[in-house]
Length: 547
Image 1 (cartoon, rainbow, N blue to C red):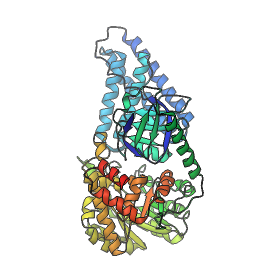
Image 2: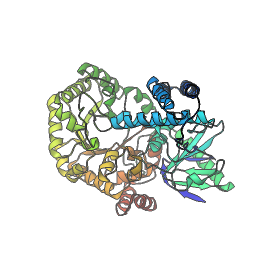
Image 3: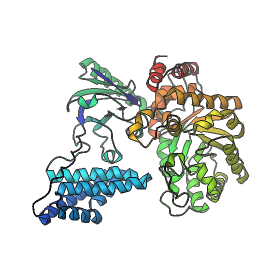
Image 4: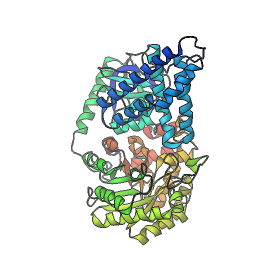
């Protein structure tokens, strides 16, 4: 039997299934007739035990996972929540129900705050589930623990789940929900393991069922034959051998160059990207300098960070995105006004034009870094809607001394006036995540519409085609820097649509490089034409594969 979904990467894995446990049911709201002090003592023991468990697991995991788990431990030990639990127990609630209601109220508060705080609501829910499980004396929900390799099957994975994944034993991720830009997909690309998302029926598989997870074909083969397992293991070995081969520049089978660049968020990530074969940087996110600050960093502070990045890429292209704040990345000193729909509000270049000095300081710092290093610096603005905004930003960048200035194509309106934009910009870089979000009216932060967040959709591909054709006519580069570039099969189609460079999470470079080497430019164009003629994202994916 085969199950089908959307594959992430080109990898293959074989192993037994282990499923994520189902969430615990909501505690019943029965009146508690026992000793409230004894019940509260039972809850405080559970709170302390869960906090200790999370800290221990964090210390074992280290890195970013440790930060996530220590933050969760602090939630379990929060005295305000404990006081709320005590009050609810005193009012006649059971310990389980008191924990459920106290944490739910706090979750609602976080969701109302939006942005980063809203994302923490999911983590808080996970902590509550662990406490209630301990009170019930049952296993806590979350990632299963195993000393033996397995294929993880789940409805979907939240950031709090993935912080504890041990990729020494997790061979593949298979989820019922999610799309190609879901958290699960991004996690799989970043860790270079196979994943298949959107797989109907996968939750019906029993633990221990042997499967072959083939990301390249988007299939999950259940109870495979001995020959199928042997073939899969052969392909796994071949991929491992290819990964250890000398790294080459990105190119098609006919020699057409397609530079493969890295998406980075901090200068410290550069060394790993270079080791994995990045030919430069196609997207450097500058938000890391701003998000934890109460005021905008100085020109000197920014210059030091930009210089640290550029100095690692002498003679290579480095594309820096100006501050992209707003929506899920609010900044109090840039835009603290409440917005009903911040994804369609004052964000990106819009926010920077409203606080022009912050933009001028950032561009000035970039000019200083440009002049102090040998890197080929390109600078772009996010959330650009039309040629007027593009011309304004390019003129300002040139006025301050930047040599190469362009814009990001994330808003569909920009693609519809692509020829005008190509006239006034030095280059265009397509952010496929937001372009997909705005084209299909599907908030990328909402799991309920994750199935619409698919850059394979012909509507998105047609916008990419317009940008590619306009760039070619004007002799301007058109890059891709969204998650779409990390999908090997889609990367081929994007090149066929006119993309001149591809930028992605560094772990995806090897798979994309290998896939590009299998097709000529004409074959890539043929696949692109087939995808454009389809009527759905799934249809485009199948059409390209068979073209």
